[in-house]
Amino acid sequence: MYNFLVTAAKGAWDLDAYEYDRSRFLEYTAESIKARFAKLTTEVVEQLKSFPTLFTYEGTDESVRVGYIRRIRERGRSILIEYDFDKTVAPFDFTRLGPLKIRLDIADWEMSRTHWAVKDEDLFEILASANLVDDSFVGADHPPGRVEAMRFKVALSFPGERRDYVAAVAAEVKKRLGQGAVFYDKDFTAQLARPNLDTLLQRIYLNNSDLVVVFLCSDYERKQWCGLEWRAIRTIIKNKNDRAIMFMRFDGADVSGSMSIDGYVDLGEHTPLQAARMIVERVRLNEMPRSDT
Image (tube, rainbow, N blue to C red; front, top):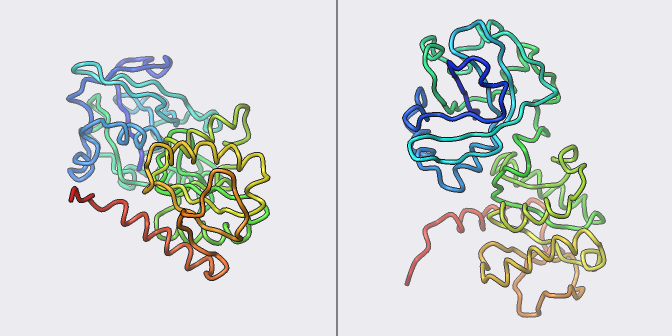
């Protein structure tokens, strides 16, 4: 999916914020998508921020930019957005999109009206086909958005010594839930190469993931980064959100903060494929409506 932004205000995208009338949000958008995004809940806002965005002007004379929305705020009858452009994608003439308009789901009359649409198309794949972005933007290993703005169905916490097994699990889970649904560190290597990584990781595990799968073992207990992730995981446990945690064990090592009464999957008895299937099962069960009885 991607955001398609059109404005008649000359020079609007030279600023770092823009305001849309609420009535213009989701114009020229499929009804099924409107139903999903009409109400700007926290989850919907995070999803919209994770989508790549085309920034355009009415008509076909101005340049097009590619980037991401980084903040969305409702203001009465308007929606304020703040955004950043992807500096690795040079601006290009709108005429370059001409042959791609059908694939991008852009109707001719859309360019005569200021609006914000959400399109169910793979923006980078289509742009790459016209050499508007390079091949690093597409493929199975390309992250579908900015990691800090994404909402994950599953996040994996594990020590590097167990990477081969966990990588195989991650690959199988992604086949079933989709690339953007799983936080596996190697998929976001470039984005994780930053200062203050500890605060970002805690945000991902504590706030941005529906299910955290923890691969416990002796290596997990002694690794510094696992310890940092474990602090976020223990906070989830403290908040009694048991549904958001799934323990898997490589061995019986004592991990500070875990207890003998905690349930877990014994990975000595299961292949990566079997482990992945159990993770997906938990995701599906968590998505089911909860009974109050």
